[in-house]
Amino acid sequence: MSDPALSVVVASVNGRESLARCLSSLARSAEPIEVIVVADASAEQAAKQAIAEGSGIELICLEGRRAIPELRSAGIRRARGAVVAVLGDYYEVDARWASAVLASHRRHPQAAIGGAVENASGDRLVDRAAYLCEYHRFMLPFAEHASTMLPGPNASYDRIVLARECSDLLDRGAWDHVLHERLAARGVRSWMDPSIVAFYTKRLTAADFLMQRYRFGRSYGAARIAAAPLARRLSLAAAPAIVVLQLWRITSLLLADRRTRRWILPCWPLFALSAVAWSAGEAMGNAFGDGGASLEVR
Image 1 (cartoon, rainbow, N blue to C red):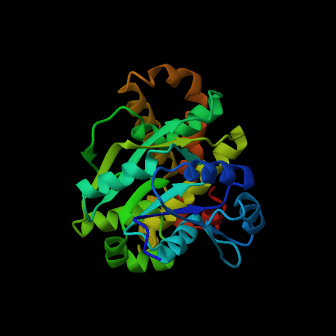
Image 2: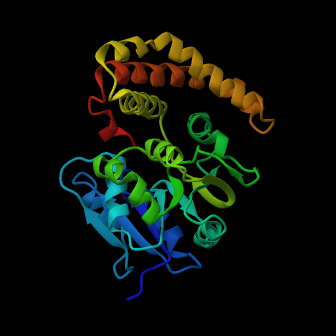
């Protein structure tokens, strides 16, 4: 059997229904693709239930609890495609997505490429706030451009280049932003392509949203400061300063975009609480490490 042009890795962490919708959307692809689902022991049964019999989808089950980057890395290591894409299990794509990924890699060989992220979670304020906090900068419309900022759950890579430049990071299950920083440092070009569109479908309670922001903030802080001495870590654990920076960042981004200005006031309380949650997490990660937060990021 010849190797596929495109392998798609999906980490299963959000339950059977979310994964089933994601896989159903991939099944409509106009291109033949290899789909690899990776689950840890806590999600193995849900993943098995979501994968249709005879679909040809490969399921990798890892022992114990694993963080999302570890699941993705295992799938990337198993992939056979010249291009490997990572898709969140709370995303759906249309039939043109795989074709757009491959076309973009033909234009930009040996590159890392991110696509657009559009909101399909509904108009509840908490879901809108969650989407805007995470993915506002990847909304359509935008022109194709070079960028080192790519959306982790809708990104694709030249598999050989990724393995060559980031083998050690894949081995330890590093988050996507760490991979992207390494690729940029090694001179690998990264692009954002508006033709590669994935639809964000996650629905959250306010408590879930804020807890996820805390966990991701702690995971981010721990990854950023892992090699620093204790004195440096403690100096960065300045949560009040991080809160101000977070609020300024999201507010300035949304004010600069006429599409999102109308959401600032309705979502402001959630943005403020989100900034506090992230900042507390980042400060804890800076000072005391991950503390298991990465295992709970969903």
